[in-house]
Length: 289
Image 1 (cartoon, rainbow, N blue to C red):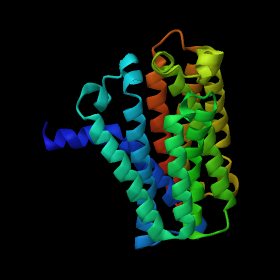
Image 2: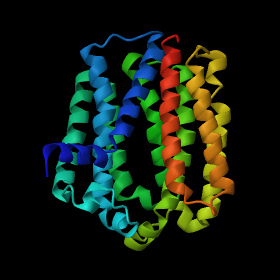
Image 3: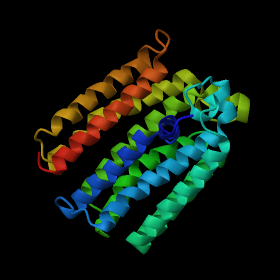
């Protein structure tokens, strides 16, 4: 295997696009807490690396423990399932990523180190136990979508900004919806490989997808609220509105069209793209555009 192929497989293993989005979320929170653009000092750079490495460790560990489930779900695009990467490499990457996250957190401040330590411990608990427990696993993932805004705030200030709290709440809502969709997508392999008790296994796929669709619609309706009080409704509002439209479309897919199209993968990819659009829009807004 060429070096380029291994790098590509590694980025796929850790879902590096998620890591970048976590970094952007922390930066947005820092700008909001600082009431303006933050200088890229070593502390700020380290603070952006912490969520990136924490995310990498969490996803590498997830795929390491889910090899059998992913095989049953025929996820041949996963590097550990396809054989592009070895379980030993995934274990090495997990340990190194978590340690690097804690190292950079230690360099920022004691508060940030404690936060990073708690987040990493929760990531390990999720991968080992919580992911198989109805709603608890979903709530943890929703928490990971919200915590970057709280984390970034505390890098700058001990006082939580109402804007960051509101945006973190939005992250929680959409994160919960996305994770419910994922558990529906994985329910066959999860049940067979790990005897998991995830939400769709307990209440059924259709009810779970309806709940996810409602959460997507709620997110789309609430996402504009920060612009009434905290954010500049300039050019940055356009990507946010586009993201809202995508989430409303995904909501309709989840609630009404689930028996007509193989929609789960499409809905998750669309929602990820919408999240990126929304983050770009919010970043533009906090920068004054």
